[in-house]
View (cartoon, rainbow, N blue to C red):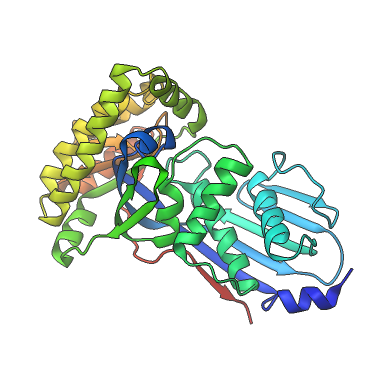
Length: 355
């Protein structure tokens, strides 16, 4: 084992990182390549004070240890790149192997990679992609790589969608890498991605944040099946699916205008319309638990709500009169939800060396 080479490549042997999770406010689904390549997609999203964390520690000798503390999962592998990335902790495996292959001359390095996420798996908050971004960000600092947020997001997308074959769109990786309140354009013909940070008045941001409630439905969901239904509808040129996607894209434009003008009630109306459109893209977007919690919410002061992410469970996002927010949260919790206020964040993925 060439430890001298490893010392040259690794400038920091003990690194932590974090990447924020996001709320998909509008346009979700139009970031799927099968739609955006043909029609162009747009997404409005905002990052929140929930994070995916990674901790990378290099050892002088031994094996590779991958740990997901929130899942209670740990796996030790021989110090090589000869392992299946689609088994076990696949994100850990895939990021490690890619970084060693592309930036360390194909040589494996003994290390421990430990991760946690602030929310359950299948939350609909882009947690898997945020974790991928956090892992890449940790390696970027450890190896002093010249990767900015666009490069980190593109690399995360490549690892998830191409190397691992995981189904999904593109918004989560860019939200986690950049952070903040963004209007993201996915250009037609796979011509690139443009992240537009919105310059919002502070009082508008305060009013929006004070109106916002998130509620975990108690059901984690597998987004791949929902996305498969949406992609299937688009591949078959299903008129209903395509029309719903066009409506969702227009709703993202409308919602951007509303937040820029501080019209939170207007955002709620678009949110309501967008949720109805989203439910037409796949039969499994909603379920009885989601509908029951939304009914409870609407009966207790919520203006509108929708499931964040692909749907089928996970977190529900709601807008309400700030004066009624406390009562809404209390009622949702009484009815079996896990509701709370949430704060917006404006920093993207970050990494720091441990001294």
